[in-house]
Every structure is written in C-alpha cells, then in structure tokens.
Length: 224
Image (cartoon, rainbow, N blue to C red; front, top):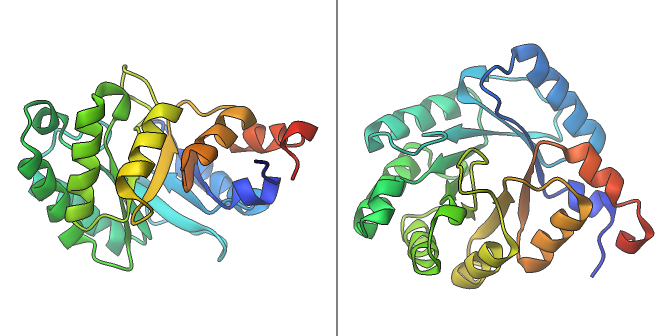
C-alpha cells in the first residue's frame, strides 16, 4: 500500500508539546500546519486560544503527561480548553487504575472528561500502550469506547516505556473495529514509520517532525 504526501498530511496532528513552548512558536506551528496540509495542531492547554487558518483544527491535551490527576481536575481542564477554542481533547488515562485492574475506574475517569467536552468536540484517550500488556491495551480501548470516546491513542511521547508500535496499533484497531479512530503518536519520525502505522490501522498520526516525515514520502517507494 502506498500513500501520497497529501493523504498522510491529512491525518496529522502537527504537535508541539514541549513545556517551554511559546505563543510565538505555536503561531509558527499553525502556519506550518496549513502549509503542509495537516489536519490539526496539538498544543498545551495554557497556550490556548490560538488563531489558526480555517483549514486547521486545534487539539490540546488533558491530564498530560502522567494522567495521575483527579477526574474532576481533568474534566475542568477539558472544559476550559473547549472554552478556549479546542476542537479536540487528548486525555491521558490514569495508569495506576489500569495497572491495578480497576477498569471501571478507568471508564469513569474517561466518562468525566467526555461529559465536560461533549460532541462535536473530539475526545481521544491516550493509553500509554508501550507500558501495558496486550490484555490491558484491550481493556483500555473497551473502556474508552464504553465511555463515549472518539479515538484511542497510543502514547504521550513522554513515558519512558516508549511510544507507538505497529503491534499496539494493530491490536487497538482490531479492538475498536472501526467504531473509534486510532491515533498513533510517540516516536514516529520517518515516512516508513508513518506508513507502517497507517497500514496497521492508524487513522490519525501525532507528529512533531511532520515536515521531515512528509518529505520522506517523496521517496519513490511511497508514491501512490
């Protein structure tokens, strides 16, 4: 399977989540996203609101990067982000609940954020797949679906266990069965990696090095 530059760009959340990021850098990110044809930008909530070209949506993060926040705090953060213009919210699950098998608690945590940012706001649930077993990945994806999420997402990119993997994306895509989107994020730095994630079932990509990935698609091996 091959993908054009435009096809891949249309799946990209062009991301800047470094703690030291400035409003000036976010403005440049938005302009670059429009030039590259990216779907959205993803920035920290303290940098909202941000003006973007009409073609570029705005995503932000919630409970980031640890997920170890009270549900009401996550909900309040999500609600504030929506008031500040976020079209999409990427929340981090409470990994302690996952690790202890409290999947009902995981679901309740997600549901609290979903209630705070109702449709048409898109809710993505970051599960830190590299830190989980296959069984835990499946349980998290099922909890996210029951709680009304729109996407499941592999990683924050900040966890020491690592970022996205083809194996995790494949399992997540199989679990949600097309009913939810799957966002692959964390450590995707080449065209080859991006294409592999899409082929595995990713319907969105979180990239910080978007231009380099898209430029790599100029390789004849990736032309449609």
